[in-house]
Length: 199
Image: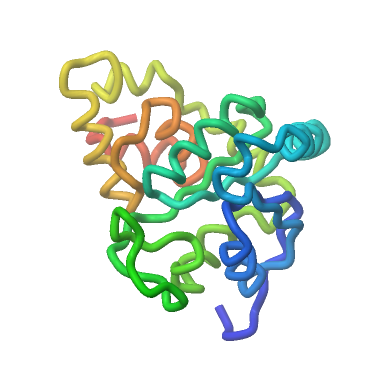
């Protein structure tokens, strides 16, 4: 990645706020929309816009990895069909954004505080319009999760958190959220290797 290199992303990207949007614009050329933080809970017309967009094209969702980001993500996930939503996650990194006087409530960086290379690498697989096809063709399913103890077992939450940590994903992800992320991030063979299963 060169200093001024930008990705061209064919899908709309939804982020929380204007500073997240500005950060992504330093990494890619794309149609980037904001939820205005918790404003998405009050603005029905914005949610309607996101739904309408998702009818035309898959939409990328990238929120912060803190509690607020999870609430916003959950709200949008319930409103947009899962096959039209590409769920991307930033890692939980302790720190404070430069423009802020104090760290966030959870003391972690949001999208605006991520290193440029990290965001570049996160979005790079989606520069090609066949990214959604690759995700849909990945056979990883809830059956795999159950077989590998990632759902439906007493210690499944702990196992999901360990797997998420190995990929720099936030902890506390539901089985559905982790499954969506893994279908994007790893091939089926890589998943099997991560959980110690022979294909």
